[in-house]
Structure formats: C-alpha cells, structure tokens
Image (cartoon, rainbow, N blue to C red; front, side, top):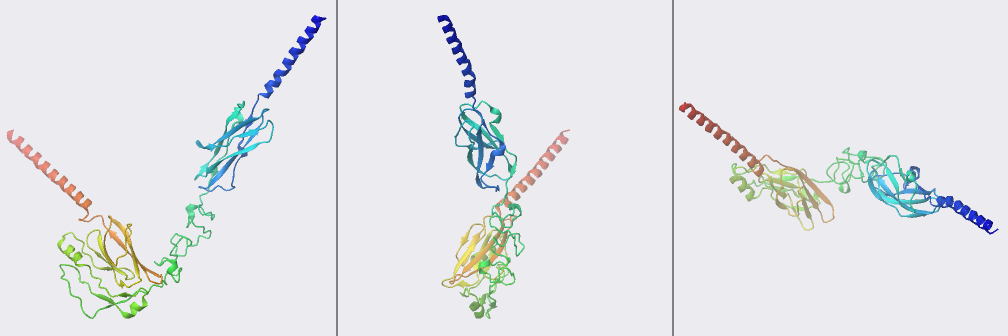
Length: 383
C-alpha cells in the first residue's frame, strides 16, 4: 500500500511539471507590431517648411505586457525617437509621435520599434515604411506654388500684376512702375499720373563766366523760377549746379581723368559730375529749407544726408543712386539716376596691372627673340 501511494504521488508530480511547461512557453512570447497603414501626419496637407507631427500606432499581438518606443527616419536620416509606451497583451493599440519639419520635394517615413521590454521575439513586424509623399512649396498658402507665384511670401490667389513686371500687386510697392511708390502716387495703377511737380529751371539773364575749353565743359548757372518753387512742396532756395573747383582741377591735371558733362537726374532734383573712373559729385539742384530732409542711397550700401557730396563707388558695376526729399508735412519726393562704373579704365588698378603684365610678356618675348638670334649668329660665325 505504501509503495502504491508513493507511485501515485510521483505520477501526479510529473504530470504537473509536464502541464506547466507549455504554459510557461506561451507566457514568454512578447510580440509588438507596426505597419505602414498606421503611420500618419497631424495635418492633411504637407507644405514644405512646416513643422508637424508623425504618428505611428503600435499593437501588442503577443501574450505578455510589453513596453517599447519607435525610432523614426526620413529615408536614411534619423528624425527622432518617440516616448516609450506600455501595451497590455492582446490589449488596445497605442500611438507614439515625433515632431518633423516637412522637406522640399519627395520623401518617405520609416518607423522601427526600439528597446522592447521584454525582448520582442518576432522581428518581421518591427518596422514599417510609407510610400513616397510630395511636399507642396507654397510659402504664403494661397494655392499657387512658389515657382509660379508672383508674390511668394504674400497671399495673392488672383496673381494680379497691373504693370506686368512679374511682381504681383500685393508685394509690388509701385504697381504702375512709374517710379513713385503707391503710398505717394495719386493714381497707383496709372503710369501717366505721378503727382510729382518737376520744377522748370529758368536761365538767369546774367551769363555765367565761361570756363576754358581745356579745363572743363561750360556750365550755365540755373535758378528755379518763383512759380516753380511755389508749386514744388519742397520749397528751396537757388543754388548753382556747376561742379566744384576741385573736380575741375582734378580733371585738368590728371591725364587719365574722366571728363564728362554735367548730368541732370530724370526729375531734375540733383546733378551728377564724374571726377574720376569711380568717383562722382552729387549736388541737390535746390538747397532745402528748414524742415526738409534729404536722404541719399548710392546703391552700394553707402548713404548720406548732405546736399552736396563726393562719393567713390566700391568698384566696377551698375549702381542706382536715389535721392529722397522728405518735406515737413511728411510727403516724399524721390529721384534716381543709374551710374555705370566701367571696369576697363586706365585709373582702375586691375586694368593697369593687366596692361603692365602684357607689356612685360611682350618685352620678354622680344628679348628672347634677339637673344636667340644673337646666339644663332655667333654659332654660324664660328662654323
């Protein structure tokens, strides 16, 4: 009886061990899953340059509670790693996310499970990759892509361009392209109406003292008429527009000086006189009275508020010199003159260097020719 009882106890113990083996195996099978259909964005439309969120949904298809996070990639470039989440065995899925700046052009997103605890036993469903997406380049969100938009940073869905200069009216400060900004233009879309009164200078009855032809061109003294001065908001006093004596003397004694005539700006607000290849004198035609402010912009980063100034441009190029006259009532009159500073001028040090180099090469060739010729004659004499 005792042996029979021991045998039964042994059978029962072995059976319990056998029954618990498959249960243990099933309890140690963590398995999380990702798929491309559950990778999404926080916005329906992808605009290049926007910062959005990328979401990925994790499912626990195993039979044990598991924690993990997701590492996101744009192609082969790491975007970032999400927060860690805990998922119950066969429970509800959970979403993770990272912030993402939408690139220009096409891209896709890859998501990979990271740091699962306990360790995921099935690697086949641990990553997912989306199809290609194409971002929209539309900085102002007006429905017109940047490449075709006449105002990239200002919304203008109608693309209206009154003067046809390729810049939409929304971002064009001069819609009729008449040289007067819209805020000062009584007819901003009519180039024939500017609101600018151009003074008509009258020749003084007293003839100007002539300058010898060998020194500089003759310049007549000009004085604005009383009627013109009263019609111009910037009421000014008379001032001669002849170049300074220093400019005349410089052009007389410098054999390479640029002798140019006195140039009057399009609206006759200032004059220009060239003193050398890149230096010019600028003079306001009429001296401003109290309360009137001047502002020069020489197109190369330099500015001034003086009525008469000599300016040396930084180098060869085309510069737009602009004069703004601000009256006491806040109204602004402007005028501009295009200045071309040529590279090919004997006063340009680079041109002189090139000429010197060419002369040196020519002299070297001539010296080499005569040296070889003399050597040849000597050898022929000894023979």
